[in-house]
Amino acid sequence: MSTPFDRLGPDLVTTDPEVVASFARDEAALGVAGGAGPLAVLSPRSTADVAAALAIAHEHRVPVVVRGAGSGLSGAAAAPDGSVVLSTRRLARVLEVDPVERLAVVQPGVVTGDLRAAAAEVGLFYPPDPGSVAFSTVGGNVATNAGGMCCVKYGVTGDFVLALEVVLADGTVTRTGRRTAKGVAGYDLTSLLVGSEGTLGVITEITVRLLPAPGPASTLVATFPSLGAAAAAVAAVTRAGLDLSMLEVMDRTTLDAVDRLTGMGLGADGTPAAMLLAQSDTADAARALEAMAALCRDAGAEDVVLADDAVEGEALLEARRQALPALERLGDWILDDVCVPRGRVVELLEGIERVAAAQALTIGVFGHAGDGNMHPTIVHDASDPASVAAAGRAFEAITALALDLGGTITGEHGVGRLKRDWLARELDPGAMAMSRAVKAALDPRGILNPGCVLEP
Ligand SMILES: Cc1cc2nc3c(=O)[nH]c(=O)nc-3n(C[C@H](O)[C@H](O)[C@H](O)COP(=O)(O)OP(=O)(O)OC[C@H]3O[C@@H](n4cnc5c(N)ncnc54)[C@H](O)[C@@H]3O)c2cc1C
Figure 1: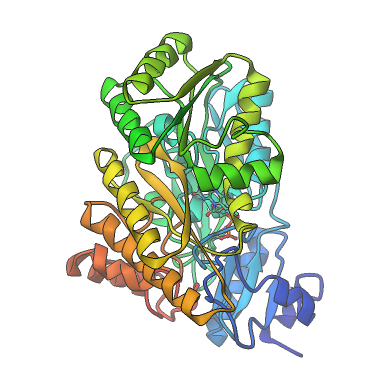
Figure 2: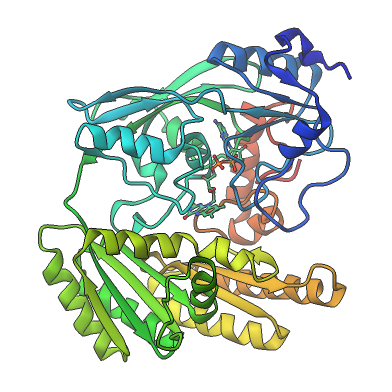
């Protein structure tokens, strides 16, 4: 099949149906893709290739879906029928690590873990660490403003982005931001592009801020007889202002699933209702974690263990990273991603338990407790219409509850296609109009990831 992109050359364009089909959707499991699928996959080797591809797409009004690793959980990289997928897999070089300016410059297809490793080689630290750190790309992280386990102390991906090179919808190549420690010239276009989910431009180069590497982290694990008790401990820990670099929670369903997947024996003495996993990477880590241990016991913790050993700490972290892959094995799943004010996590968790009971479904809960960002994972049977309907109702109820509690419909996974219809329930009409105006100004023909974030 010929396409207008053939003039880019066979090295850059694939129309092999099997290959194209494998690029058609991301990790979101809620029927967001389908139909005939995309026309082709483009694999540019340079910014000039991206510019040439977008100029053709603009001329022929062909929708373009940029794709990093396709690990997104909101359907943002699900490619609609008749679109082309622009893969960043060949734009995967770390271009520079500058220890004086404490920054790194990378192409968008660099895997996040590789950037962290390159920074570590010169004693520096790139904090963002989504659970997908071993396979998601820096470009995807920037385009979704990904979070992760470090956010409680270090913030999200966007907090580290200094500058971008971006190709606009018509193929124009431009740069935003700066390399300097400070700089306030003009509108903050870099922040506008962060989290734009491939709808405003294709990011072809990223300059990130680095930090001095922290010392080895110490780890605390606490188990609780109820999710409510764990949430109460989180509130007490947050109130105390302890210097933690991680504060994560997993419920019994998640712990059991992780045990089955990894054989780690987290629930060896009977799986607890909830587990908190915390780390501190300050020089005074032992004091911070001892203070946390006391607060956990006050909140009713059954067991509190401090682990100074870095290997043990890393193993526990890996167990947490396996939460989603482990829950995926329980059946069909819909993953939610809601964030509420930290003080209202208890109400969110209690509400999720009520929803699970009302819909007679298993909902595994894990998440970034220190940020109030939870990932209720609704397990159901996709072959049973009644179960699918119940899962849909559960998803609706949990997302609505997060809004009612003063939270947001998405803490870190993005709006994508999954929550597009929810956006106007969170943003007021003025903010929705501003969003549409920005989209129309930067992508007047609506070719960049149409149907993602906003209606096409
Ligand atoms: C096991 C697992 C754990 C996860 N843990 C976390 C977590 O802790 N925190 C978190 O935030 N997310 C997490 N995620 C979700 C996902 O990994 C992130 O959203 C990640 O940032 C997506 O990166 P990607 O390279 O896979 O991007 P993709 O899924 O390929 O794309 C995501 C979006 O970014 C756009 N995009 C990609 N590259 C570019 C570019 N160069 N220019 C413009 N737009 C672009 C795409 O069009 C799409 O809209 C997890 C996913 C899995 C499977």
